[in-house]
Image 1 (tube, protein in one colour):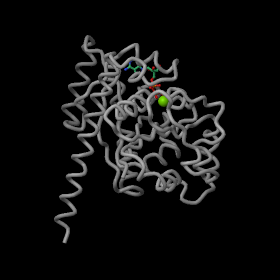
Image 2 (cartoon, protein in one colour):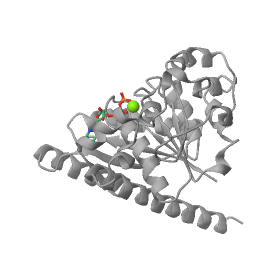
Image 3 (cartoon, rainbow, N blue to C red):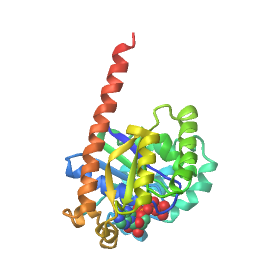
Length: 268
Ligand code: ATP
Ligand code: MG
């Protein structure tokens, strides 16, 4: 059964989509079956996977309002071999339409039950807001991956996200945990970035992934070719870092499974 992860941070432009598409491609590189869900009306993960967002007949929007199943709306990423549940501007309307529907936070979770057996990983690229769309992602997920730049203001936004995750954990999804903080667009020459990175480690310990994603121009160029950086230029430093992060995620999932098994064993 798939493990489901949201890539979330309400701050804009911190590397969520870059992480989502490259982790998807990196996991495929480690022989995992992966579904990537674009939950952002900007449709960047869709375009970055080589799927034209203006030509979608069905998308995650129809899935959320109950007009299509996940299987109906899926498309393969031609270059990297994962599946994509794509998105476009239509999804902006879902925010309003969902308010009227019952179990409005659980629409994605319920829709995914049809496909969880078909994948090892399901990754959800969230929009830069703590909105009803993000809430649907958080309710469907086992864990949250938080990409962040090691800058001064990065830590300020983090407390809002952590509080939201705590509330969702308490009220809607007891399975939800922060699986880890991922340092992205990292430039080791910047003293401030080194300092913030050290603060993160001091504060969050092993919740900080050991993989670090460097600032790398190949990762920024790849979306204009409709490819994840990992397939666009596998030898680049950025691609190698995401492949390493894929391996670390597989290890974390194995560790999560081992803890769960132990807990089940001690239950009477
Ligand atoms: P939004 O909040 O708008 O959805 P986002 O958090 O998904 O944004 P991205 O779109 O992944 O962020 O990244 C923002 C910009 O930074 C993009 O132009 C992307 O190509 C670039 N970028 C992301 N990661 C890297 C990196 N490691 N090195 C260089 N450029 C990067
Ligand atoms: Mg994005």
